[in-house]
Length: 368
Image (cartoon, rainbow, N blue to C red):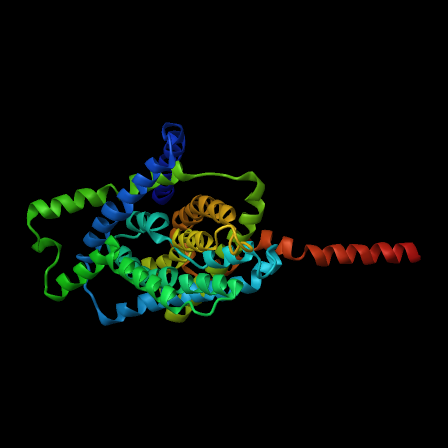
């Protein structure tokens, strides 16, 4: 059996084990504790090890910019597509999707697979690219959310409140453990300090923490899976559209930059990340400000369901890509993959046209 496929099957068994553990979890706080452990301890240790194994160059500064461009492309194209996928423009559901769809959460949905399938160097590059994504989801999407809120409230004197919140978000961005680790690792490398320069006990401790990354994240994915049947079809067609669009954008990037090997696969799976929790946090803050007065700005129930469905959906797509390996490095494969993901959204978007055609034929038959 293909080694990559064997590894994928092993990962799916770990996700299944996590799913079976759901009955042992008595509340959301226990699951949140596992998430904090991953994002605040294990993921930073993994990124730290990966960064100290590579050589930093000036060209790597392009990675956050490329991630920002990806976020921006997803945002603007999503705004055009959502009304055709069942979300009327400028409604709570539309605004909710506009914040969630362009966001990326590589920490839980893609970093462990990069480490296992592609190695330390692609993981370090992905961590640097995620800095641009963090700026987008923490700062830019917050500004978008608050502008929608104030536009609906009709308030003009909002600068002090908004600027204060932006300052808090900037501090949060700098204090996030992964970002602190990236800054520390880059400073150490600039002074010629790599992983082998650390004391043996410290290197061993960090390496042991990093080794927990993949199994713990996969168990968490299984424990976090939740399905809301009433909105599955609605959410699925949006996620399929997002995934198909990401395949097309990755294909353009690979073709434009001539990426091959692990870097080509990295460009593909990074764009297939699950949606981020941060936009939902912004939406919750806006709804708390709104209180009981006025029309809803966001649909928080829909947002929660998208978060719950996005993680397993992205996991399946990413594992599928990595199971086929180098096959997905070619734009000639990514374009058909994108079209395949668009079958469900296209069927929904074209439904009015098909209904109109059937009506015309019925009129013609009646006239005959």
